[in-house]
Image 1 (cartoon, rainbow, N blue to C red):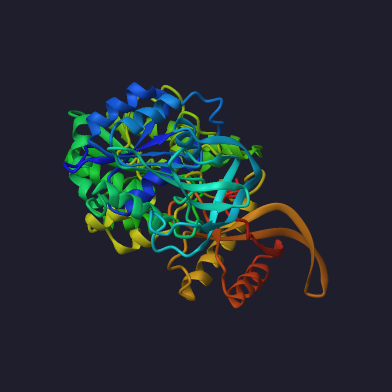
Image 2 (image 1 turned 120 degrees about the horizontal axis):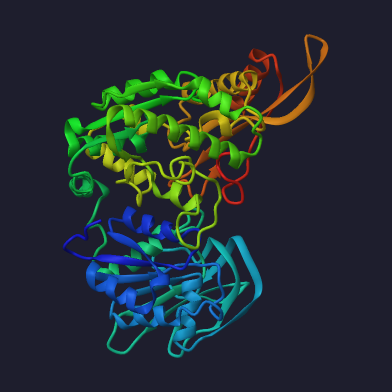
Length: 518
């Protein structure tokens, strides 16, 4: 992405699972932020800072100990730039270490919700309450602050949970042990906003501002020839295809593959959204091909790989028929990070459009949204004046209901999953509960349970209902639905679907769970 004239904030990625959330949170505050890898070393950071007009640097969290990773030079390079610096978790400990503080084993490890006591309020903690419920994840801690630093906050496991240091002739340096970028941290955005105000970039950028840049990026990537756009009717692939169409005009051919794994009514709904967005996709019916390939497959990751492989084969076949040279995809950053495509990130689950596509596809990939989050993509959709139904549409996993049917996907189980999922959607939407929800769906579990139907013993499937709130899909919280809504779902699912005897509600956040079950 091109850097605005005002400059940017660089977020140094040390391999933490939430590193890109810092970038996303800063962007939500109107700050143009970019992620850069710590693996490029001090010289690489200095080069990036020069090229990107760095007005501030954030050192992210990471899985390593500051005594093992060898990142001192990166922190020293950040401090040498003469711009505001903020360390988070690992970055907090790293700053304290290179500035002369003492880092060691924490009095006790802190994982998940933790209470922090604020000691100094006239800093980046301005406007926050004296006790904060924040998200921690650490075994090491800053035990003594750097010389001359003020301790801003503490917790049972972090004697120096936050500090501020005014360096001679330079801007202030801050470190916080908790993760303000995570939605579960109280006052997290306020803290980041207070820090970002020191850079002078607060409120100077919005995602809609980069539409022209994304269009030009696609135009440069495909100067000639035909491109196919894999579209599903979801916001990511639709926005990517619309941007590509603005760049390539008639050289873009949208392709919608009906794999038979869509939720009930999804094909009709998706095609309506696509046509309402100015796209006229080629529709390929490949239902039998997908179901045949999934026969006997029970492992979740293998199911994702199978769907990705068959999807790629069908798409490549269609692309060859159309004489295409390029493939436009709506890949966004959560797809990338969960598939382990970023250095240092673990493979949480393979997304069919990142790790699932077959090698040697023969098409040049164009992914204009690769470094954006879904809420940012929605902002771009608003800037493009795309249909409201698209903006409010909940995400559907790329492999469809293949990952909402535990175990082997059979026609019988798929039919049950589709009907149960439709009932959940109907109840949520009819009651007006969908506003503010990220996803709401049903999972056909591999469990069976005894029940009573018509005064007779019945032994059938267990359906799990999953409803979550989220901003970016990297973290999620279970929604506190009204009891009456849950009762209605359970009554309808067990009453309308003969093979189901029990309904359960999933109250697990992400992490430790993922949003999807598989």
